[in-house]
Structures are given as structure tokens and as C-alpha cells.
Image (tube, rainbow, N blue to C red; front, side, top):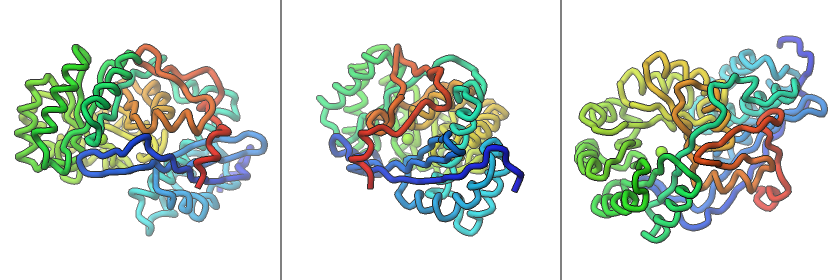
Amino acid sequence: MIPASDPIDRVTAEVYRVPTDQPEADGTAEWDATTVVVVRVAAGEIEGLGYSYADASAALVVTKVLAPLVRGACASDLPYLRDAMDRAVRNLGRAGVVACAISAVDVALWDLRARLVRMPLLELLGRARAAAPVYGSGGFTTYDDDTTAAQLREWLELGVGAAKIKIGESAGAAEARDLQRVALAREVLGDVELFVDANGGYTPSQARRVERDLRDFDVRWFEEPVSSDYPAELAAVRAGAAMDIAAGEYCWGIQDAARLLAAGAVDCLQLDVTRCGGFTGWLEGAALAEASGISISAHCAPQLSAHAVCAVRRARHLEYFHDHARIEPLLFDGALEVREGSIEPAGTPGLGLTLGPRAEQFRV
Ligand SMILES: [Mg+2]
């Protein structure tokens, strides 16, 4: 271990489970609650906070596998710690829950690092822009038309430049209803850009057919028309598409991002700070995308994504996902708000977030 000047002396992981405000589903999953694993790392009095939207088992990976490596180390030795964490999880497999655990620790380390030098995180990362544009995201397949329209109108009031609804209902078995809901969204949004996300719900030929139908509604972004497990199929949809094809939320590290980019699968690479290796993984992924001439967009976790998007030149926007937009101000004090369609990181040290008193009622 590298000798540390401000050694980390405490690493904790806590689990919070927040029920949805109503039943939710997309093309290939349904859920009634969201689980958040919150990691805190401290050097003396100064504490850093990170989190991931992950199964509770990620907390166990943090406390049993990662914490022994992090304790005694210095928060600024991020590359060293990242290397140590990667080696420690070799036989666990780094994808999925493990990548979420590593991401939450990485975010907490960046927060601690910034707080130790009393700097806003964005100042440490380096600023490419002052505020991150957001797009509204939700429009679940479980919603009736009134609920969908009301949610879209809420985002319009926030000044968003685009909004996204879920399609691919019941793994592509409800194509007519998908298009009816797209028509509704187009009507409510007026001139604001319309995005759709099928969460891999369609077959390849179905995705190509739906893509042609979506042109009638001036859809600009078709996310995971087919599963990201098959980059060549994504690329085939993209080849004839009149809109951007997006994917990348299941990139657990830059190797996954490299595979999508090498296949020519996306016009915009979506990376999730809470899955792809924290801010370290985000910056690496952004460099990789830049080298391929592809822009990136931040998937979910708006309170983290705002900093991430502001730090990268070719980052388009962040996903203001309904569940996370609701949960983050419930759990954290200092959560940033959307103003005129953007989130602007504040001048407070680190991320500016602390666990608030309301969090306790959701603790598992
Ligand atoms: Mg998605």
C-alpha cells in the first residue's frame, strides 16, 4: 500500500429501499421499489458519500471485499485503489452487483478527495460547462394515458429539452399500444424532442419495423431497440435508422463500452456513473467515446450525473429518471434542482450531499 497522508479510517455501506409511487414497468421488467446502496468513507472528521442503485448484496461486497483494501489508503490514490479493487474481485466477476459496489466506493472516494481539499467536486473534475441539460424519463408502460400526459407536462414545466417514454411493452407483444402512447406523447410535447426506450423488448426485425413507424412521430432517440447483449443486432437497427440509437446502461466498465463502440452499435453511449466504475469509469468511458467520435449521455442518478455531464465536453445530457428524481431528495440533503431544463452543481465542497433525516424510514 502507498503510504497515506490522510488515511481512510472508516468505510460503511447502508441499504435503503424506497417504494415506487405507483406500479412501474418497462418493456422487459416490472418493479415496486428501488434499492439504493449508500457508501461512506471517512478520513478523520471528513466524510465522502457515494451510492449505487443496486441490489442490497452490493453492500456486502463493499464491507467484505472492498473496505479492507480502502481502509488505511489515501483518497487521492484512486488509480491504486481501483487497481486493488479490480484484482480483489477477479474470481467474483466484476460485472453487475460487483461493478455497482466498486462504483459507489469510487464516487465516495471522489467526494472525500474533494472535501479534503474543500473544493466542489466539479472543480476537481474540471468544468466543461456550468450546468447539465436534463431530459425527463419515465412514461412507464403501466401508466394510463392521463398519468403519462401529466408526467410529461411536469417535465415541460421544468423546461426540459426532451422527454422519454418506455415502449416495447410485454417484451414487444403490445406494439399497437406502444405506438398509441408514442402518439400521445408527441401530442403533449409539441416541439420538444421525443425519446423512446424499449429496454431490449423487440426482436431485431420488429425493432426495424417499429423504427420506421416512429419516424411518423419525429422520434429522435430509440434506446435499446433490441437487447444490448447483441451489439451486432443494435448496429443492424442503427444502419437504417432515421434517429439516434442509444445504449450503454449495462456497461460495467470500459471494456463493455469498447465492445458497443467497436460494433458501431450506438450514436450515443449511455454510461451510468453508479455502474460503470464511478466518476473514474465515466471519465475513462468518455475518453473512449471521444476517440470513436461518439457523444455520451448519463444514465439515471441525476445528483451524480449532473457533475459527470458538466465535466465532459461531448456529454449531451443526463437522464432525469422519475424514480431517482423522487428518491434522491428524499434520502439526501443538498440535492440539486432542475432549473430551466438543467442542473447546475453548487459551490459546496464535494458532491454537496449528506444523508438526511428522512432517509432512516427507508433503511433496510
Ligand atoms: Mg434505458
